Image (cartoon, helix red, strand yellow):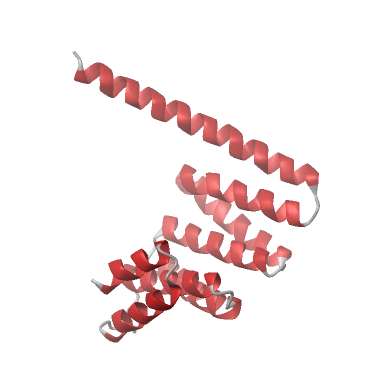
Length: 169
């Protein structure tokens, strides 16, 4: 499908090709209905424009994604959209907006136990505070990132050990 192609082109850094196939996919969809596939296409369009340094377009499409995911109740995707907006605003040195979006993402991540997203969220917040030349909060979020990462690694290790134990019994 065109949607899979667009994701592949993003990974290959072929952003013009991604945009071409996103537009083809949009022509085949009912864009008046808000659903996950439309959100994915808009996510890829926003990402492609971001990589092409066309930040106003990246923001516009990422905000469209956010509206879709919020309206259909996809918390994880909503959190990711907020994180993406945070990163874009950080790139264009709009740090207050970047922090607002990062905080919204963090709230969703904590409320829904989205630890992988929370890990990324702490990394984003550390980079915002680094850009603001605020080492106190930069270090604070780097420590939170490291502690959470270590915790996740320990959990994964324990799960793998249990699986091995079960496998060899």
